Length: 103
Image 1 (cartoon, one colour):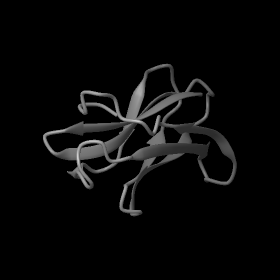
Image 2 (tube, one colour; image 1 turned 180 degrees about the horizontal axis):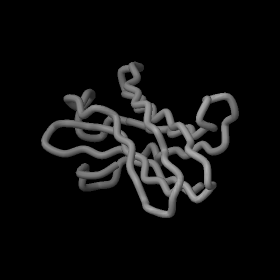
Image 3 (spheres, one colour; image 1 turned 30 degrees about the vertical axis):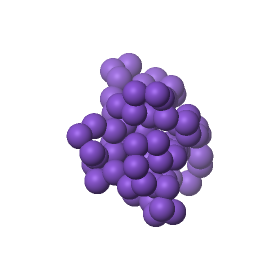
Image 4 (cartoon, helix red, strand yellow; image 1 turned 120 degrees about the vertical axis):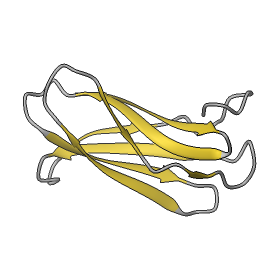
């Protein structure tokens, strides 16, 4: 299992995304959490099918909170299909880049 997680912003909207590749041979389950600068969170629950093809999981896109350089963070946790055994945790870099377009 491989995963990379990031926070994206475009057009005044912000969301979390994780890119994954599940080569484990078993279907897995992911929870992606976007932590906003106002202390609220947004979650997405995603099935992660087995296979060598890359996939993505995204939180809903929402109006950005706290201005251009507000500290958003995203964390994806991947578990077995029943959600009982954590297999991988992938987190974003909390610091936005200078352009403010991708975080």
